[in-house]
Image 1 (tube, rainbow, N blue to C red):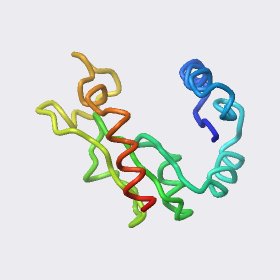
Image 2: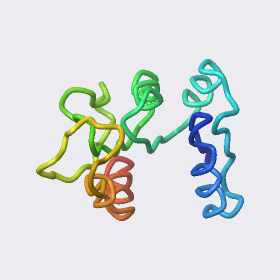
Image 3: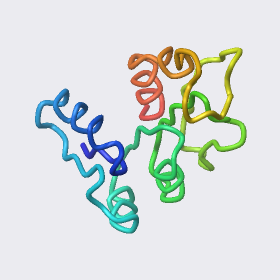
Image 4: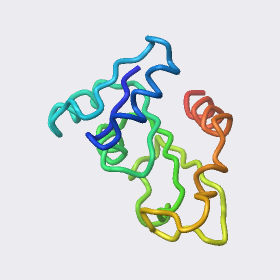
Length: 124
């Protein structure tokens, strides 16, 4: 497993790495865009939020599960038939705000189980 992220996501990436107990390589904030693209191209599966790397994975036809919250899944979904979007309908979403003025329920309501189920569905 590889954990991707930008320099501002290094702390959360380190938390994820600790949870995975040495089963992942953390490259968050350590790669150039080209290096990140080369690594994504070699992935056999990708779990991501609505992000640039999501679109890179889609462009390379890497099977992917994309988690959407405050962003608009109808306008920025991955251009790929080999992907599944995981999201929950909320009255406030998509608000498209980077900082949530309330409780970020659009993301916190997405469970690990829902993401795993989507991944298993795509794999099978």
